[in-house]
Length: 325
Image (cartoon, rainbow, N blue to C red):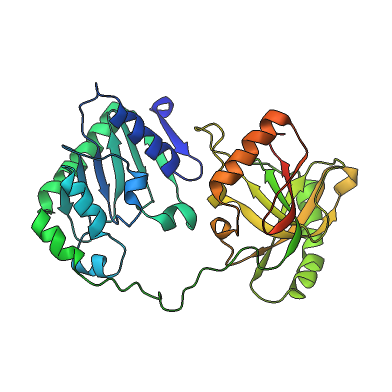
């Protein structure tokens, strides 16, 4: 079973969306896409593209979920018009998808916040018995739920949406200050040595004292930086992110660590311990003038040209890219 099942690191919607797109574009594949996800929000049709005749979506489409804005009657009606069977199963909490012989089981709702703000996890499997069990679960949920007609969905669509906290929840503009240099750095999982951990723990108290000078709303974080001449200066802003294992050249920007470089230390002359301040409310995808597509393009250009820095118009005077090293 282990060879047929894998844990998805980072945003599970990248491989799910890719798999759905491939499945729907292959005219030979007749099996329906089966979805049982608690909440289907406004951007769900981007995450689950091209759903149509024969596909099944089971979700919590209760009046309270529609009114709260966590399930979108507009998207459900769009899918219904395309031939998707829509089932309301109130209090559903599952998040499972079956695409052909592949199934995904995880924590993510079909929502923009799941992609942009939340740290999700999922398993992908082609294990025959497991996929069969998930299919049975979805079909059972469909039988237990209530099938929604176009008329009932149109009625739900008329409900006024009142999102909790929407009156005061404005997106913070990132970065929170005018900065000189912004670094995009490809980071890797790393197991520190005992001496490195001890050095980081020794540094921590002094770093936290300095962090307090920046006011509330920040957390101190650190990473290891290879000892080389090209590195961020104190006061620069740093974005450290992983790339997705399954999709080449797609940068997992919503899972980046963001922060202002605060200090360096070097355990016994080896790689640096780089400390930075991370705004507690920073959202990478609210960056001014730098959307995810542009960053992907820059990363690809960098990979092809092997340049060390690329000037760019935007919130930073200069953009440095340190990728794929």
